[in-house]
Length: 276
Image (cartoon, rainbow, N blue to C red; front, side, top):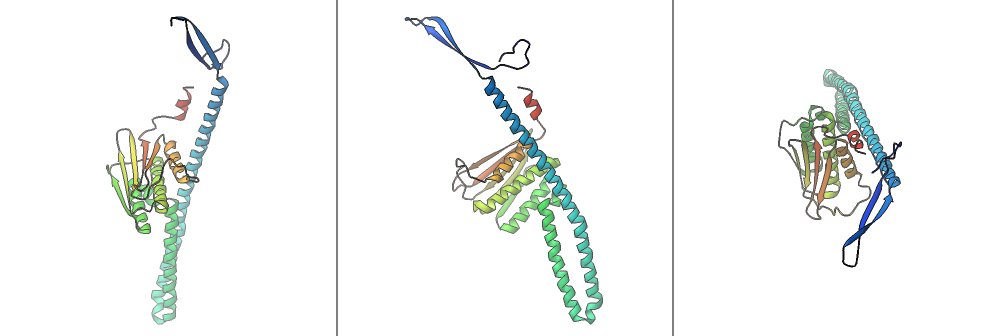
């Protein structure tokens, strides 16, 4: 790399020197071959900058989406949930007060209460799909809730192992871990034909390590599948936190997804660009 006098743009040259030998094999000179690849380097950097901006945009969009989900879940839980509970209590009171003298009214109030219970359950499921309340208590309670919910719904044995009960992640990291596990469980239930899932969350000196293992049919990781947006989303969520995702699988032997997320922000994109 050279810097022209009076200029402010680096010049990138690739120089290859080949020795020139005489008949006895003694070096008598050298041939230098030079190639200017400044334009190629500029194109590479432009592509890297575009990728960086796209990742930043995706991160901002994901953050905004999570905030919207959180606000909407809170509004539905606090407002719609409270109105439904108040309505249920009033219908119950009517049934108790007047139902004894009117079997037909008692039957109708009982039916209304049954419908409201179903509606309240639907509202709770909507809130949970947006952002479960357990996530506000920390990543471990959220994963416990997710495991119980998934096991109840799919009948697949699901085991959570937390090696350190004192794990406390900030909201950004906790949400990322929760969403990665949620997406993993969705993929397993749809494609893996597994009978058991094991989720392990642990912390070492510098990073959190998450594992999601299943005993399903597995797949060939060398074959790239179209529309594998679930795995792409996992990679992006980890990358936004300076981490990474490793996927290992073998046909007939199940799949393991391993996620590494730094405890602290050990690097930033801005620092990386200073190297250029």
